[in-house]
Image 1 (cartoon, one colour):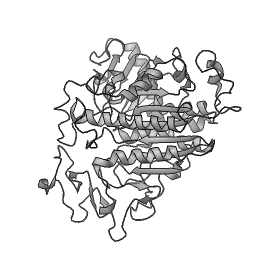
Image 2 (tube, one colour):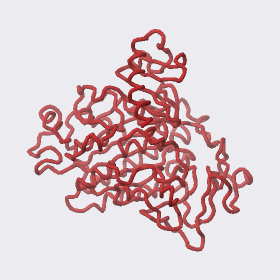
Image 3 (cartoon, one colour):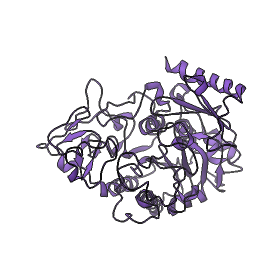
Image 4 (cartoon, rainbow, N blue to C red):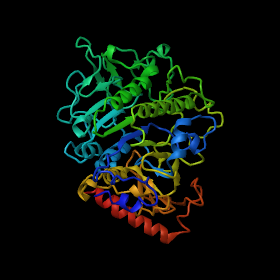
Length: 499
């Protein structure tokens, strides 16, 4: 693929410049920062309607850039979305679901991934934050006390500072490149999701030691006063402190940006844990919002974005940085802990009227905020209403950076670069498919949303323009549309899945 869209769009959209399109001639390739928030809803930012939560930095980027109103995560849960983002392949094809902290790496180390594509194109690539795509191999399971590989570095990242799974799962440690940070040899880490490891207190056995009560399933090893999913022992000096987790990741992200040298562009995949449970904002943000602790962690995320923008501007990088902000899926306000988030929303609607939650096939599970900012290339801000799924970033960024990507390497990913620069861009693919954690799939084609079922009478069909909340099932009233979308589903999902 080439950067042909730049030649087509330069007259009407891109800033006048003697430079050639990115990746061509003397034009510098853009730095790229992709911010993937965790469990943030379509209605959680001010630019998407929030009034009880203040997000001034994100709102400014949306006002001055491109705000998507029909953007989707590839799945309504974490690991499948991250897999699809980095590989350009739907996660159901490899049966990727939500992973435990000791799962093997799900990505083929020989695959063309997003970071590897950019790395091969001259980018320095970095990961900071949540990983949740496995470590090690089935034959050589991850050993947190030794060299941790394969992992992010083996799929295209030059640098990685991350935690293995989710902030409610063990092991509760940071990993830098191939090693657990601050691990003492005399205090090795043991992790299990099948049985208790060691003699650490657990939420189930020692509830008096909890500073945050669990609601459902989060009653195993207590770390920092919080019960987690799974058991761990050891690594006491290596364990994170939830109250400072955000600042730790922010400092690593800023350091990565500030240490880029010369003319080499960089790609930073910044994946903060906000607003995933347990929600423990830093002291600066606790009690700050009008929507309780849930709003606090969203405002904390906005604060991170403000720090990133300040750093970019101070280092002369702002104009030529393509900054994207989105979320891995929709929210679930009360899932594992009694943190008062649901009870203190104060009228805030994280879903902005959409039906469904994280893990579902309805819009609230996978329609997400999606904001694109590239000051040096965008003249006129606009709202992009065309449907878009960020499984397509692999092909899209290949075009934007002038990188070569074959159809085989692109897999399920398609080029959506026109949507980033042209308000009247046409649909770039026939339909979008969204997965839940069970591998079930919904399909959107135009304004129609189809949720198949093994029992035809239970299938669902909605017209999103007229029924954005998915309340009126048209499956029996629109038989021809049903047949058309079911054919797309059968041909793409079942046939390829069985191969």
